[in-house]
Length: 158
Image (cartoon, rainbow, N blue to C red; front, side, top):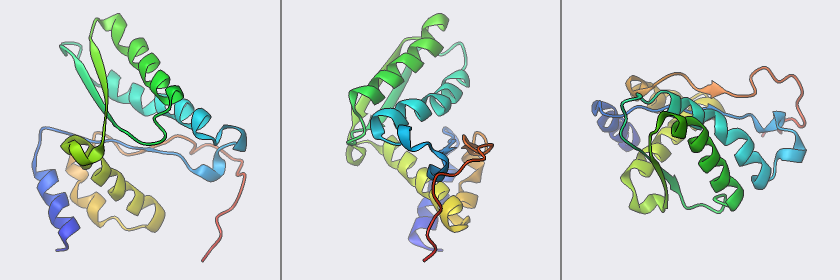
């Protein structure tokens, strides 16, 4: 078992969390909305809505951590705030959004690991890590543009 597989097994053995992911095939994204100030606000709402709607109504508060990346522009922060507001304020659930460095936040490190497993599955067909952590899946990935028929570019084969 590789080091990555060992870490995946350790993460999966803890039952107090679950994961989900959204897939956006970039070749199907209209070039007009591919810039970060358009892309992230457009595609962030679906997974965030899914996660927030899955929270029990008896929740006392929701805490969201995001990585401090270059993409955390005001456009992205506004999309998070609006989605949380739409989903939680009507249910009287307070929420807090914090922007941390993933190096200092264990939850973000776990999210990065899960994202890596999903990336390996979708980009390379390598499901080893994904399968090890499958017990923690809240649902299979949401392929947001799965019904999109138009592709704006093709991947170059190497």
